[in-house]
Length: 348
Image (cartoon, rainbow, N blue to C red):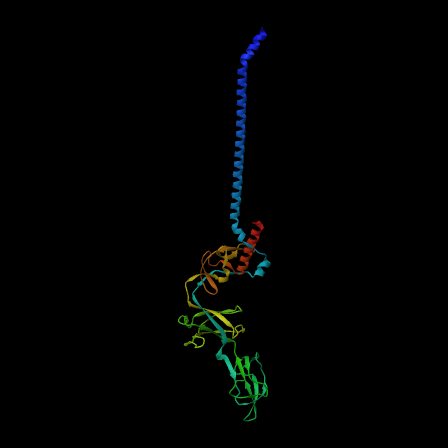
């Protein structure tokens, strides 16, 4: 009887037990899904935080690279390399950049010190003592001639000291008082003859300062105009402006071409540096200054007017600052080639 009662109870309670178990299973399954979703969310949050951390690191690195940007333009050289590049310094100073005119010209003899030597009496040359290129002192005997009239020999002496630039006499040759036998030039002073064309004739005047450069040699000297011809040459269609130069070392050779810069207006005073010291780097005008032992750093400057040798610095440099006046181009080349090598190493 008892067994029958138990069976009846089991039959009656079985649907409820099954329903309860299914609900529990569903609850457990839903809970498990929630845990999985939460774990996925946590994982995604963790990945997101990692990405944020990584992004912050990249930004820091980019910022660090930007902060070091100026260092990549600083050039460090050994003392031997500095000497090899010929690096020298000058100080920025105030001066004048005036309005200028460029004129071509030529070195000529000082015609006030050019001697054409001719015999006093016609006759036969018995002795010649100098050749072209020899230096003659005033009073030296340059030739001995036997006179046709008296048949006596007489000496011909140099009227000035200078160089023999021409000779028209040989022993035994007949010479006459109508022709020069020697031409002697005193080259201690020379003339610079500048061609002044009609467009500039009204601006070129006596007393103006002129910077003269010998084409091909790089020799530069400053003088002043002492004479302007009052006429236009019918062949060259130009007037001549003349400057007298001292020439103790004979570096200004007659016949050499020159380029002259004539200052026709003085201009206002401003800060000046040597023109060749200014370089163009990274689309800016720069000067190089010392940034430590054997180190050179470019500084940005704003330039103004220039003449043959100097250029105005409107901003970026102070008076008295030492800058690289010679060797700046070599420093710029070092920076450019270093940057090219660095970019090539990236393999882009």
